[in-house]
Image (cartoon, rainbow, N blue to C red; front, side, top):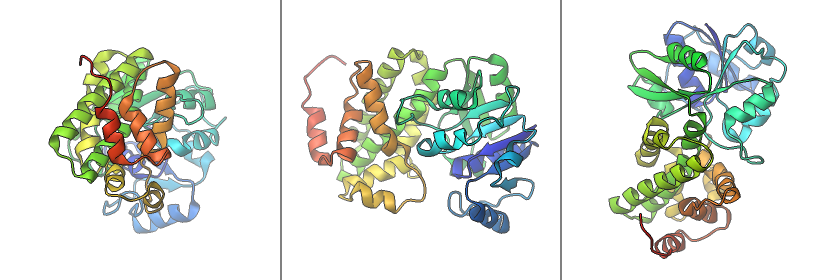
Amino acid sequence: MKATVIGDGGWGTALALVLDSNGHDVTVWGPFPEYIEEVKANSENINFLPEIKLPDSIAWTSDRKSAVENSELIVLASPTKYFKDVVNSFSGMIPQSCRVLSVAKGLAEDSHKRMSEVAQSALNLDTVAALSGPSHAEEVARKIPTAVTVASDNDELNKTIQKAFSNKCFRVYTSSDVIGVELGGALKNVIAVAVGVSDGIGFGDNTKAALITRGLSEMSRLGCTLGAKPETFSGLSGMGDLIVTCASKLSRNRAVGERIGKGESIDDILKSMKQVAEGVHNCASALSLAQSVNVEVPITEQVYAIIHEDKNPLEAVESLLSRELREE
């Protein structure tokens, strides 16, 4: 197929490499012409996926119209902070017949919508699929064995995307639970910030295991209230993605939390980063969404307090441990 990846970050680039290796005709769109020319000249995405050689068979452009012209598969890979504006800029350019896939993990700041919902509305499409799971871009680009899940309410669309991406290194499962798959990808980033804070303070494996386990519980509790299937949170897009994001040194969300735990300010941390840590930007949306449906998310609440209310991390830990005792 002719495939277009909208978003020249690490994740978009890694997925472009997967599609290219499967024989598809791939174009990557990025918003800054000067940087796109730099990527083409160096055959390397230095800012977002360094030390990975990019094949000449992948086209790079900053022109929206030419990027999506005649495309049969469009992958929306912009960070959630910029997702709505980027997708809106392609409004009217993408026909109903095109297969569209969102790979962004997060929630809209203003509406709390999942990214597939944002894309459906902005592009006036009936269905947008979502892909999520434990998948660091750096490892996918290096062809480290990876398994993810694609979800939508259209089985034919799911199977088409599954076939387009799957190969000996990258395995795609299908699901009809788009709510659970997308919420798992969004909410786990917030929990990973909490785990990073724990690491930065100097706590041990007991604390990390408790945060991951109770984090999964609140992810599932909120997701099921919103219509997701409970078993989804035991799968790749739930527990799988949560584990890799909380445990890996490659995780930006965990790394941000670790720096907070060591005493750095969130403003200084964000200024030093080229890439986006989704959990930082999504903790407010996640908390607001949970409050709107009266679901308790204590870890998310404390991450929000640390990032947005300058709460001392040790006080946040005390707040969690001093909650009213209850059954598991």
